[in-house]
Length: 297
Length: 105
Image (cartoon, rainbow over all chains, first blue to last red; front, side, top):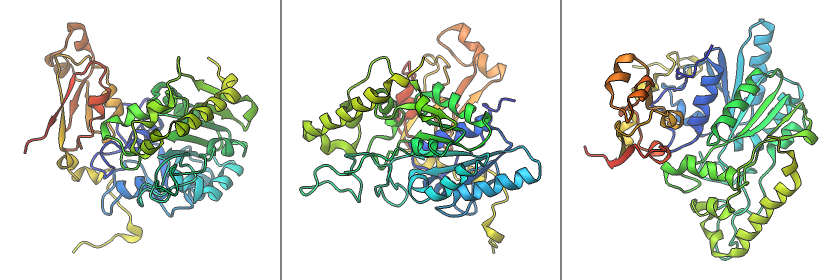
């Protein structure tokens, strides 16, 4: 049954104009259908979609705390299994609730092999509480806790945590990075994850107009540039087989990283020094040099 | 007086539709049906979602289209009750069929 024409995520929610997270959520739900239970970690998505007594969710939904979305999803899955019910159990978490605070619960969920799809919508900082850096914040990004000034002209000094590869190393059934701006690839991966048995993890890029500092209308354009410049590569790893990871999408021609940087206020300071832009370009080139051969048409 | 439900349970799915977020809008997308090729890219990317896909024969045939053959395809319509005016549809439209104009109230 195809539910693409139905909306399981209702309008009237409080997510910012131009936020990409609802695009991710609405499509995951459309592809999963009504036979779904959603578990939500604390974050923008949870706060803005369910201010009591209103909810934007048209499927059963539960929020417990910041750190335990994966643990709650594990319990929901175990209960469904005990009752013999076939359900899609989907957990949504931001980068803070997934790569930092919810990491141990997620690690446990994947290690135990619960039949859950965990979707990380990654906006690369704690946007809900006021743009604090997380382990998913990329090198060079301005946040309110990686401030840019005379003492630190760069901003965030640590590279982005490779969370998808870390979860794949738990031997998860299916792990993929995805980008809603590269839509066919994104859709294929959500469908594949929903059809796979066991613990599944999708790392989905999700632009934040407030924290990335860009015009709301540019959301999808900027996310597309993240992949077209090679900064956010799209790949999938099955059953923990990292050696045989598959890069599923490669732009015909890579765009210079500068095009991605110059559209966002959080990177504006980097453009003042060509050395910084050069460093980021070299990092991207090095990634593709190392892993580019994993691309299969 | 409204009593808080046990566990803060909300029993009515999707009741956020009572929040008319259209009041957030500063700029307003307006579809120019003479240009719209009905590709549904705006419908795909609307984060609200406030772009509706209308599939009934009457609307499809009675809405103008750049080519007669396109009238077989579903029509998109903006629900201004909820559109926050982010402009993603205007930015992504491949044929520039969406104008983005200042909201007048």
